[in-house]
Length: 252
Image (cartoon, rainbow, N blue to C red; front, side, top):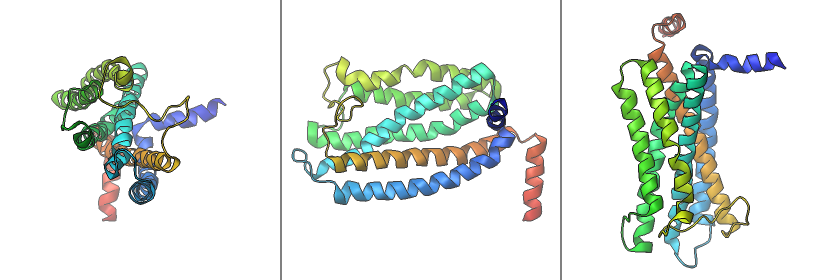
């Protein structure tokens, strides 16, 4: 039993994780392409027209998964930050740094598609709604994290400072989720609930879940590619990186 845990724990080393990240990236990319292609086809050509919103509702197949991923990725970053603070592992901070741009992209995509959806529904591109405002705060948290990482020259000090910011900011995630229940808001409530039957058509629900899984696989693929670059940058003085570069130059 203990040897099994040791075998998994060895991947906390950047040198060991670097080749594994390449394999994960390739598999995740293939899965993401297939799932997103299927999800988009079902969203625009299979899912029925909504009897209230017409064809304009189809933007939810991008908006809702993007919103979910923006929250989920921030929680994942906070988990990596906590692991880094507790166990002082370098890879944890690198993973959080690699995920951040993708999380910011999904937060922006959520707000952007929400504006297109809100215009015909509410008659305006933007309202200071509780959920929209808290999602905007999430985007600022992503941008603030990346700005703080860039502002501190010492990587280890930057890891600790940015980890604290992530852990403080994670309180915003449940605020986003419960905002439609806590405050009087224009934003509609959740149509997908874990403890109740969904009010959505089965085809709509399936298309949305496929898109969510596709975005999830995409996030993994991009994070793996990005973390490999971060590892090489931060470990460039290590012996294994120098040997890797020499080997690649020799092959070229």
